[in-house]
Amino acid sequence: MIRYIPLGIFALLVVLLYFGLSNDPRKIPSPLVGKPVPAFNLPQLYDPTKRIQPEDLRGQVWVLNVWASWCVSCRAEHAVLTQFIKDNQLTVLGLNYKDESPDAKVWLAQHGNPYKVIAVDLDGRVGIDFGVYGVPESFIMDKKGIIRYKFTGPIDQAAVEKVLKPMVDQLRAEKG
Image 1 (tube, rainbow, N blue to C red):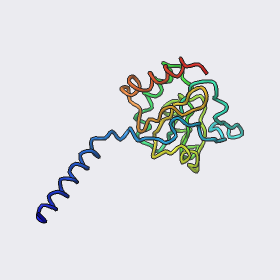
Image 2: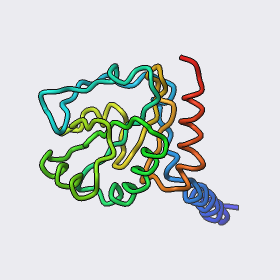
Image 3: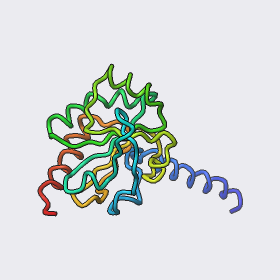
Image 4: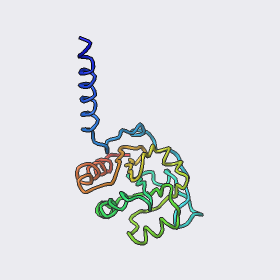
């Protein structure tokens, strides 16, 4: 009987490994979904004397897209994100995360700026408040300033069609 213990432990490890590898890494749960947007008051990238806070966006469905110039995946999602914003006339707040402002400006000059406003989170504290694991990450907020969805990783066309656009359309149709 004792000789079967290692076999049982091995079988348990195989089952755990299977479930771990079969999970979608983009579906990292966020304890913030269903809760108000964390408070912040950050300087804007192009005019640091101006500030942005969640209250400035209340009354509309909006997206917070966390990105950085040093992020390779951000470059991969940029064209899809830009088209999604344009097609849906969506308000997107870019959160420039742990990035130097001159680098961010050069990156946007090269790749285009789809954002309504870009907030600078140089020390990453706002990212921490949102529970950011890494960039890019995007959060969809409803008209009342409640986080309704978190998307981890680069946005691709399948995510736009299957998740993001339906979510935005649903939130826009809600009263409030």
